[in-house]
Image (tube, rainbow, N blue to C red; front, side, top):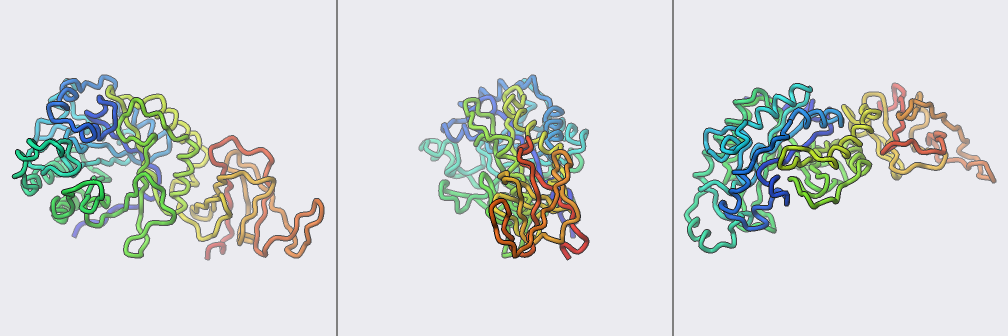
Length: 429
């Protein structure tokens, strides 16, 4: 038996940073550029020979994550192009064969630990560079008839030892790894023929190896067999995620601008406010947000990414306790409000600022004190007789059990205003 996944730190963190970085960062046209543009290995080779990120500073990445309120960071140790950011014994297609010449994974792990962040590594099950990886609907040379004919005899079983061996390297060389993000199985994907899944990865044995090498590690759901968490990507679930009808921890994977890797000409960036709303909405449904960043070819995060993560950090500085260690609440919120609960405190996140009054159904008699989180100013309850008839300036009675709080006219200058409610001892009994 191996130790079960340590999910306590994960559900406490709620926010993580995803880092997509590799040879594709030099192309600056999306991390799937090799596949999208049907590049051969020779076409792609100039990126390896010119990979020399002189501004690479994983300590700056870690500081940005920490200051934004994130609890963990996940780095793409190997993406679909097969290029490895560490000194692998199983291939020379690594950072060590570039002008950079350093083990980026080692430096990343050290930087995260230095500021108290949990360490996650991403590993692509797909490998467009490996000589035994069969050509399929994702492969860059899928439309090259001569290449496909030459590769017709490839057998994924000869790729499995390489796959398992590299995972062993990542889980034995850098101390404790908290989270392993596999990507991805696609046996039924409508866009890719020749898809691959659990049998192709020898997933059961691979997962057993992971559990043996790193007891307590969290593994996602993309091996084609159940993992510890589920990972909806580029959409926001309407309700808490389940597996076989039972609640399951989940993590929404989101980009800043629709691209995971550095994409120079894509400026469709989400606002900090929109991303804070995604974070809040996820926590209210018992989920995490893994928010991606794509450093450029020199290793820098870029001004837009710094600005956005800085904006999230500004909000988290005042509201972290409504997120970190918080989860869903057993109360029904009004429209445009999301609830999170942490111990005896209920947090009402206001996606729209009401005029003068906030009406909270079912909370009358359950709240000892209420305040705005932005400045800890008290919000005074308004006691209205449920039977009172509205007349002129008199508010009519509200449904029995409604808690009404008097709000200032001016909305607090923050991405999402939050009301902190101190519950009575029997409020959630």
